[in-house]
Image (cartoon, rainbow, N blue to C red; front, side, top):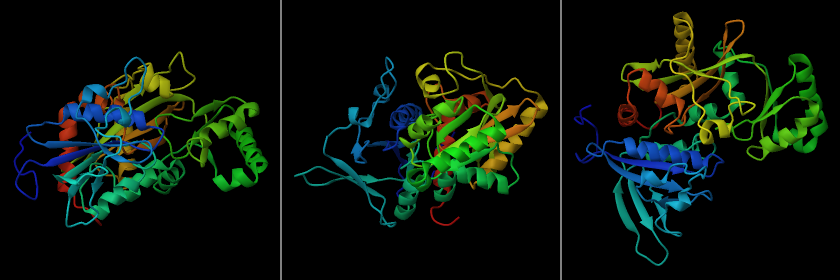
Length: 382
């Protein structure tokens, strides 16, 4: 792809800040994703500035060393492993007339790192994928890859995501929500309500953080005896909990990518049952390298239908850039949408880039398309 006509304020190569890490429980996966993105960015076309956010929220200047950002011997990487200083911090101006990034350390004169033309945020979960970082970038007037403030928030909160999908006529499965105040003030009533939900829809249930990802904090509950522990486990990640019924069928995923003429869907993938895990949990996804089958072994008619639904979900939530849409293909032959991810994993074994690779878009071209789309898109109301 040509580097011509890439918009910058000075005529130089566009400068991409890859922001990763963060305060959520998905910190390590974000670091792994950032390593893959940094390896893929064409350095002949873009200048790159890696910025890591530590688990306590400090923005840090990090080494541009993707090889140190992978899972090694089952050990998860962190931003703290990569920072150039334990005290230095990076600051992005919130003045929309300036895109300058400044680095400062105690007792030293702040150092200007230059302007940033676009941010590639590869944060997963709260404080990064949920609209908070996107709001900061909107205030700063800096373009960024991926969904905007509202769609990021909707894509992070499984309750409101489902409410939006229902309002657009998309099929969702049965669910209940336990709000923080309810569990803190009247947990017995919350348990009774979930037991009634199970009586209607059957066991097992899946108890999840309402605003989490990477399958962290999720418990499959076979009967009432495990319910309270499952809720507490979910609440370790998010005080708001969502409870979903079991949908029998196959797990099918589909990627959506924004091109100049609008969003398009990839070939879908099938996530086969994992033999050593109760479900497709964090260990299966990232540690044991469970992998899906691309393309999914479904009929052409089913492929066309899931692609239609994936784009419809993208549009319903007003998404931009990219989305991975996760579905169940039930035993009745119907698709039910489980969730969307507005910043899906980009690790080497992640499904989103694998689906697009099979669709004819290589990993480097995928990263380039996302950066170019962000550079074309204005900040603010659009």
